[in-house]
Image (cartoon, rainbow over all chains, first blue to last red):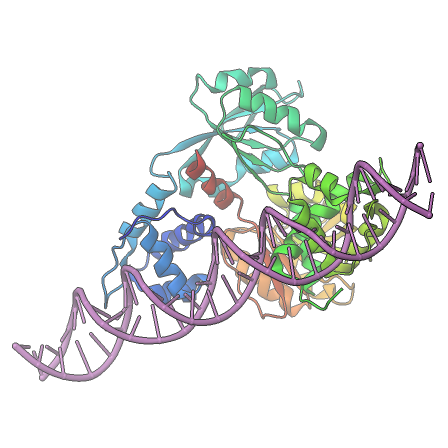
Length: 203
Length: 203
DNA sequence: TCGTACTTGAGCTCACATTCACAAACCGGC
DNA sequence: GCCGGTTTGTGAATGTGAGCTCAAGTACGA
């Protein structure tokens, strides 16, 4: 294996591989790049090349050891250890996120939730008690460095600012707005309506 | 202007432009690629190139007419007319989507909702009555050709199959699973947890 | 009418990403 | 130990997109 920086597009695909492999690990022990390619609809040499970026460990004639592969990808994505995340905004979307079961397979634990509505504060959703948004600053002490923003559009930027001040390093933003943050803080935005807006083009 | 197929990446950016321009249209009449670039954090020549794919209509020295631009982008994305969409799965996430206000700015109207839980059928969320999932086949008659899947993972593929059979042409899939569909049907998947899984890498 | 400031549209180059193609590595059976 | 069937890992070829640059077009004031 040679030294390479891992291309962005590869990083984007790693979670896809991981998802597929976690599913397959129940059924099989080894898999060839060809079979995996069919399963997740990616070109097989693409897969081999991606894997080669973080060390080759496939066996010619046999394929890749699925469990080993899962460990490696998790390590690459820094998912070997469990991560705590905070949710800000316990409205419809926020509540749905709190109840969403899918985070666990990647080792995420939504350990805190915040809102500014006094009626919601103190209530519990999925064993997480909703705290006043002014308590955001406790995040650093609680070692929570990831956050999910699910507040209305107009509050998104100030929420992000508060999170940055609280030492958060990564933000998953659901508001339909480009959030600005220091570049040491990584922001990923999911604008649900915008994704839907792409759909009619292809019809 | 020359004939070009529009690159995928451009199609992906068009909704971003649209979102920004809709916001700006309240304040200004014209905008230069430079100013728009600052506003939405995209390179300015990128913007000009993207716009040139669907006909040049900027004025040197002045910039682009915002309203005209909005019309053109909507036309390109096939958003000039309002689209009806159906939601399948009225659980936590589905209910949040039904209540989500952001679809309107792109002209989307969630006109129907389905679930298989008898307790939910008949209830109303945001003026949409939840119907039995067996009524999916009425979609064609009701001229609904877009659908949003928000059902549990194990039901996602069969839901997609039923939607395809009901004549749906585009699917926004929220389940953490690659859905297969005939290639005339466009599927866009948003896997919330998978997006979050990319975050720790950058920290 | 002319000059200045600004902006577009497009050619060009470089960087990046995808796919092909094949030698080398491995397995299992005989 | 050898052979046929697989599959990996990687260099080379191709495809795609991003960003720089600049001639040409426009507005506006002197």
